[in-house]
Image (cartoon, rainbow, N blue to C red):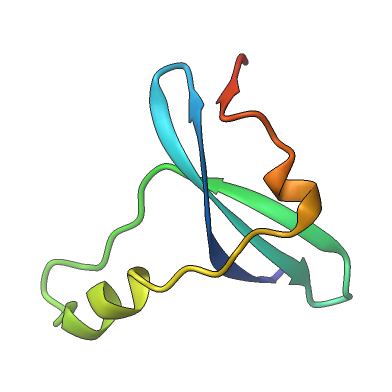
Length: 73
């Protein structure tokens, strides 16, 4: 499975760990959302462009915006 995701401004907490919600779709068009707690680039790579792009966030969809800031799992 492949998904294409975009970072949103929405964050939530899972057991005290902050996660940013990313929204996207699978290659077959199924909408999904991903809770990202960590993301990294190989230490041997130049991450300057990655770091700049990582600061870009879009507003979440209404469905994602309605998710409570604190989730209990």
